[in-house]
Image (tube, rainbow, N blue to C red; front, side, top):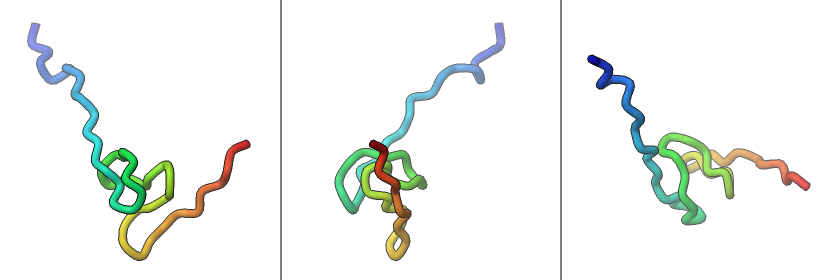
Length: 47
């Protein structure tokens, strides 16, 4: 009966400041690879 800590939480999303798509906070953007100012991950193109 006491399982209030097992409840599902809604995902939080923020806008990427570089391209404007939605992303999770403190994570790299899936569209452009932006992480923070001065750091950008190289994304491989999936065909």
